[in-house]
Image (cartoon, rainbow, N blue to C red; front, side, top):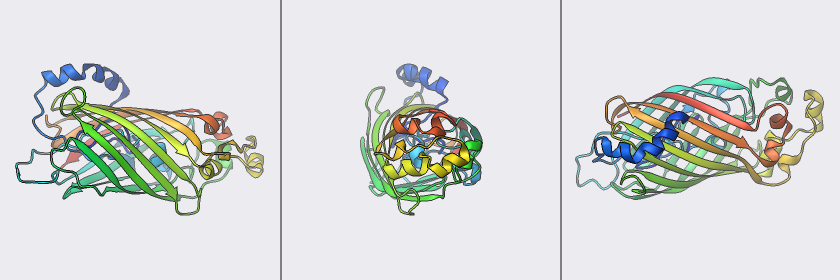
Length: 342
């Protein structure tokens, strides 16, 4: 469940995808019936996780691609032609690109919004999956076997966190000064099981992403556990849901959410040190997404994708003046686009 601002992703061999919220709620209730009414899916819906559509790297896109703030388990179904190589050991090779637009808060905790272009590129070669989403890149070092029901993933991830590095719309938060881009290195690990509820093609997955700043900017870490579920409604349509939390280290809270006396004097916001007192859950997210194949088959060609995500800043992070006074605890993002797989 999720990555959006990295626009959307699909639960591994059958992963979840965020649909525009309205469709998602209705789609889940109708999933079993729709799957039976549509043409049976006699193929693998193989897809790498973490394929969220990510905004292009520019000053207005600084928040959208931040791994710790976006539900990376909003998934896009990877659709490709059926593989006729019966003696093949690993899931088939493929490459996918997507582009669209997305609306996101101007910083994590903001009540102002930016509309951004978004894109991603992902693929798999000889069983190894990879994905790029905005300013992050990750690789799955465990080869995906052909037709497997249980998929274990593990690999490195690198992220450039650019939250509050420029063009903040709120004058008080802008007066606190820009933050420098942080380089974060970490690990992504998870497991997905296929054939759970509606058919042999639906999936439920659990994953954890852990990131540590190696650039000396916030000097801390972020851990994000996520659970997601996705199911095909037919050969044309796929829908998914996700839920995740972000656990922040003390240094992260100090750098992005505390307000020191100098910052207070410049911005008019009160002095605040609560976010750096101890590591805690600072945000949770719920995502809904979906995809519809223009070609009539999710495995190949052009696919329309769309989704929405709701996040809530919590505890000491929600109490920060940049959220509670200058921004909002409620964080929404939504977007849509077109993907093509070959």
